[in-house]
Image (cartoon, rainbow, N blue to C red):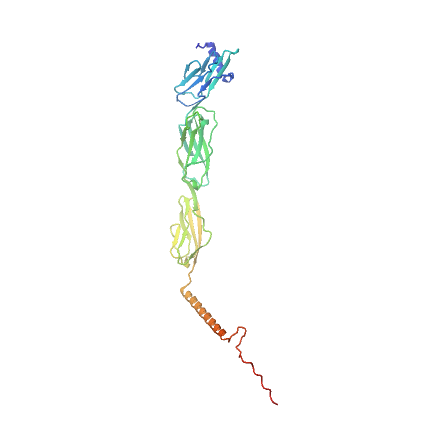
Length: 369
């Protein structure tokens, strides 16, 4: 293979400054692999192929570094360390069969990447506990990643994904630092939640599989909220039979942990130090309004219980009622027996109010003058 003249080299340098000016040839040289995805400072290689029947005066690679090995229809380019971030590799030949010396060329796409050195998560302008219903900004900081547009960032709460993956369309090819943000509203359900972010380098099928991934540390959310009832608040009166147990519970959730105070009670009940009142046997004097006050730094919850104790009938009253019922029963039975006997002897007809003789009346004798 003859050497390239100085004139030809200068011509090719000018030509390759505007690669888009290469002619669209029938037999364009091609690379295997067709594109490279290589980690910065890693080795790599590619081969440019020329069709065997192509007539060429010059067949070469235009590249600023690396090693080239020629044969008749192929050029192998190898690099021990990919030190460049923006590398142009052009394979070309000159078709001497054309009158104007047509140039045919191909460019090897090369993506040089660097996974982030570090990923960290923080809450913007905030330390300590969050307050319920306040909005806070999570910030994911990605350090020294290249190219930036290949870094896909996602926020998580535990295993739950919080957002659509964020991608910044940046032309930067060298490593840069970047921040990604997401706003959240603190709720009591978030208390104790673990927040974190993930950076995934999406490099396409030519890149490493699975793609490089780096995750931040976990940030534990502490959410302070005012006291709230665990169950539904009582809506009806609490009715209990006399002698039965009475149980009132005003336990609530809150952060910080709330304190309890019973502020309104019947005179017969002593206020407990806890959220629960237990009375073993309810008595009429336990009826009344019970008010529980639940308090922490963020507010106070008041819970009311209206208690009604149903009294049992008194023993003497039970006896009196029983005697009256027995007497009424005896009287009813006696009356029934009496009427039954009268009916059997034919001496009583319900249609006649008085007893009458069965004999016909005798007419009185006329008085004599």
